[in-house]
Amino acid sequence: MTDTAAILRDLEKLDTNTVSDALDFMGLPGATFGLRPLWNCPKIVGRAATILLGPKQGTAPTVHLITPVITRITTEDRILVIAGGPEGISCWGDILANASKMKGIHGSVIDGVSRDIEGSESIGYPVYGRGVTMISARNRIIQIDSGNPVQMAGVTVRENDYVIADRCGTVFVPAEKIQEVIALSQRIATRQDGMVEAVRAGQSVEDVMHDKKFEALRQG
Image (cartoon, one colour):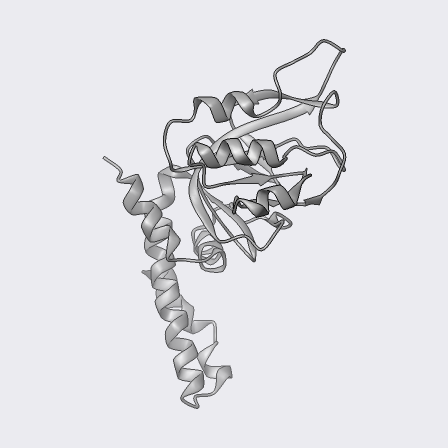
């Protein structure tokens, strides 16, 4: 049985750069560009709860987007992974942030933009995405799906995949590969720490950073 808590503890000790490198070594997608902290957020790790948004059709009142997913979450290991946000239209705000904080959700990653970002910041709720806006989603976009695969900055993310996000951006790791990715990331981190120490000790950076130094990681 997978120990999710132990996996998240190990993932928390890494950073997106190292996890991205591990995915590169393994030939896996997962690293993204452009999904960055929308305030001075802490690093977050967790499992994806996927949500897909789309344009609203018609004028009938609907349940506000994302609220059904927040309501049904029962574990404190989740990150909301929100796809389909249109350019310039908010798909996140401070009321959703407060509701998510109350449920123990670790944060939100939006392939889109957020409004009321000061509200999220004031309660310490991490939000990663493409930017900020003031334009409301109401009567413009709705939730059209959840719990199914979504596209985030060109990467397919499934429910329960793992997420790590920090100041450099956001990386998604397939759930079935997480233990391999963490093990390789740990080896990469150890190797890179050794390279920094070697440079500080006066070794030639040309030699220290030669591609052959990483071949042992690939072979391992």
